[in-house]
Image (cartoon, rainbow, N blue to C red; front, side, top):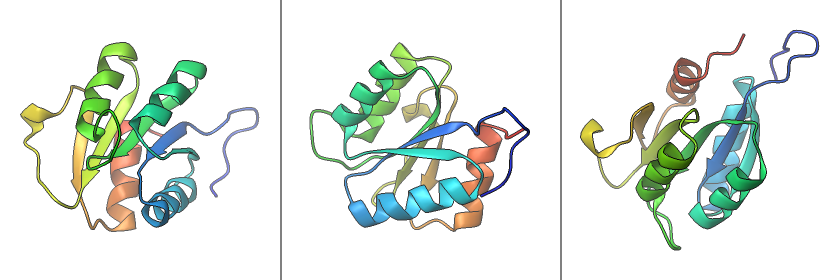
Length: 128
């Protein structure tokens, strides 16, 4: 993990994916990029975490998930309720035009290279 200036904690990324292995791999890349990762299995768990914390800088969500909402609906809910939070939406099943995504968000197709994911994360939330 990259070091940060004394007293400055790395930005927190909430990784939302219902596939445990994919979520674990995403968390690993996020942490190697210098961020702190926290995890949620689905949109409902993600919303509960967002409601209980004020330190999440970015939500990194898969689109295709079971539960009350998919990742795209989660992205719009995050934008409406927590406007400062950046959003990275990923999917291996479909491409989404940027018009489907909320503002301050971007889309990344799966499978993605770790280096491309790191670049996207850092473009959304620069690490000091």
